[in-house]
Length: 54
Image (cartoon, rainbow, N blue to C red):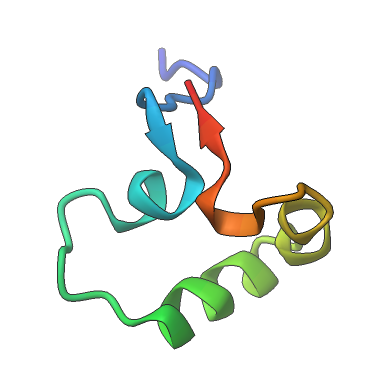
C-alpha cells in the first residue's frame, strides 16, 4: 500500500520541491509546477513559491 497523503516539510514550497536536489533551477521548479498543474495555485499565495508550508 502506498500512502496518497502529501508530505510537506516545515519550509517553503520552493524548498519542498527542491528537496534532495539542491541544484534544481528556478526554471525547473516552474516547469515542475506547470506539469503538476499547480503553478497558478502556488502563484496565488502572496509569497508564491516562497510561502511557508508544512
